[in-house]
Length: 255
Image 1 (cartoon, rainbow, N blue to C red):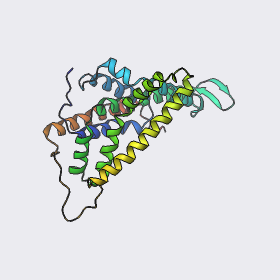
Image 2: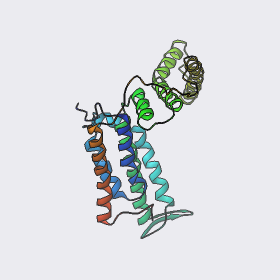
Image 3: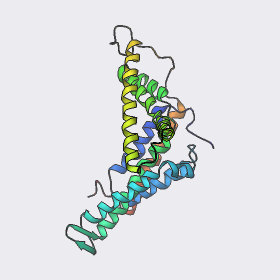
Image 4: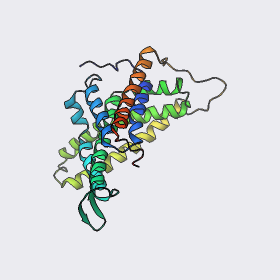
């Protein structure tokens, strides 16, 4: 599957994520969220993520979105025709519109993050943060190490599950099994973090910056392709706002 983001600087991906998601946080209307969601679905295959793969990666959002919509449906500001009322819960035209907008907004904000941040290399991201944004080297190296450790969680979970089944400990209830596995994963993470911190200190990663600046093995810079993609990101981020304003649906901060 083609991927237009191949070879793009990781900082460009972060910039596009900010550009696309920030306008959605300024308004609570279903039009801008729906337009942004459609744009994400259309662009996902171009970014190397098929619709089926996107569905598999975003299934938790399908559960979270209705939950956020239900709370808005029952307790949002009243307005328009009233359909249902019980104690503090009231369903009106305004609460229905806000509930739909909230559900769409959860998907519209989260899906671009999944598509754009899916295969960012932590080392390349660290190079970009240090060389382009000039962030402190100690912070960058720690962040890269932490992101690297996140990729091991899935393997650790599978290994722990296989070990427990081999010992006959996997036949308990699901809740008990989940709690035990989570606690075991936490213990492994803490132990690995301590060992990693000691190893990094031994290799001089924690030394204070002196007169000589830290060197980097790979050069990270923004090229014409990066600026082009960021310009496209500005265009795609502006389109939902323009359509929402022209349709009269724009509600700045829900007002």
